[in-house]
Length: 142
Image (cartoon, rainbow, N blue to C red):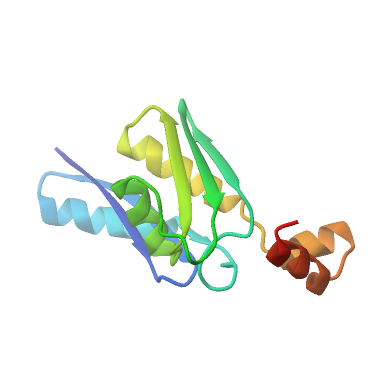
């Protein structure tokens, strides 16, 4: 039996993952894609390139720490994490994975972290502030 892990995305804030099991590779890929379409995640990208704040995700004993970095900085991550984040359309981030290195656990932990992302609009509404003032504070690095 073959087990395949597939990550799909539109490079604009939507991505998903799925696992497929089958006797032949073609059937396993078909099952994995069908499962990936059922597990889509949608996030609002900050300035159309990255995250607005740092994130932390966990699956079993695999922990993922994603740091938001400026657009000018290149992505610092393992090839696996880089591939997943580029499916979301994220071009700048710093990723540290601690613990279990099973690909499925890494994928689940990354998607867990990304699902916790809030855009500055949502943060401003929660705090009762205006978006413009929070954007200025974020840009100034305060």
